[in-house]
Image (cartoon, rainbow, N blue to C red):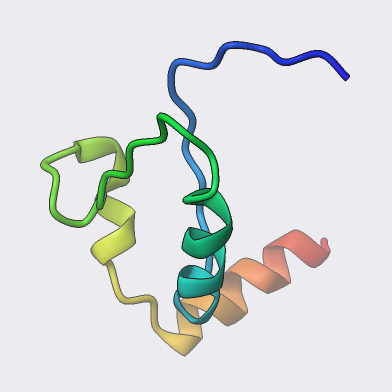
Length: 65
């Protein structure tokens, strides 16, 4: 298997998987983590938005179509 040099990637996970995922990733060398909630990155503003049950139902309904 080839090893490819990677500059940056974005990984999303559920909060309850966070600790286990971080433990696994920390085995790799030269990995740096950024907490996107603490950084001022407008493209990730949706991470701080609470979504109502109504919005979820509407989105699921649209996806089902």
